[in-house]
Image 1 (cartoon, one colour):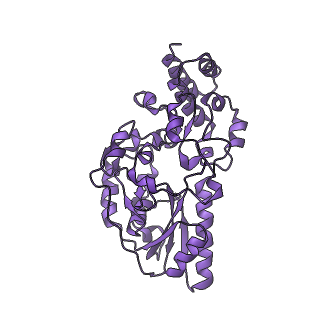
Image 2 (cartoon, rainbow, N blue to C red):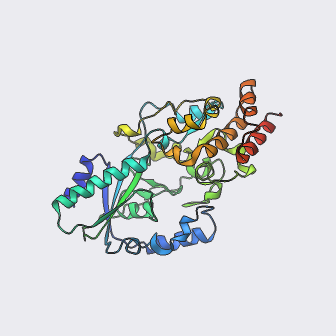
Image 3 (tube, rainbow, N blue to C red):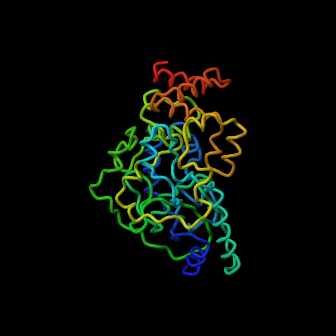
Length: 342
């Protein structure tokens, strides 16, 4: 086990933990969450049955899960609060400022698998990075990488929460790590700061209200009741992490792929809205943002412009897409123009 952890660190992972496959407690919580409808349009959260909470149902012969975390907080990015306070700017969640984490994590996990295979006989494995029915936070918590915070993200006492998670399912009966204790205490900072009140109770998020869900997962019209609350957050939302006291210990990433690309930490809404589809694909190639597509990007930017300070430049930008060929874009542009009294 010590060798596996050392190999993981050599590949750039911040930490490796190992756990068994018993997610019975998490299964009850997950099923209750789905039953409430809190997963919204994320049908994949429900359709896989017990495969999400019973690793051996997903990958036969799995007896252990190797859980890895990788810091992503980029160096030299413009301060998040400053961007959000500047209504003319585009706020993008810190995790999406660089290269798509799916690719980076998957490659590193596969290299770790290859290393283990070279040294251990009969090693079977399968790699996951937010790419299949896997309860990442629950597994990472059991593997001792941190505790599940009241915002439902994993928090590490020494390193905060600005990190990605990935897993290796394996048939090896490796020794397991101990779960760490919860240190949220009476703090409610994440609950109090949430712009849309998506954290409906400690350790419970109604995704249908979450700005990350609304701007990334939701493919249709964003409910009017949330549009003004979104502000200029056009891809994700970091508010709950920004106020978490434990993030004073957060580590700047050592992974160059997570450094800011294309100036996305400090770019204007008007400029983003003017991109053609070709420009969007070029600038977002290799980025997690590419996954939402051009139409959804324009939808989100339109809302940001609707919440921006009124100016001839903003109104002119919106009017350029008032007769856009896409109905979803036109709807959100119309709402935004109404916010400016036009």
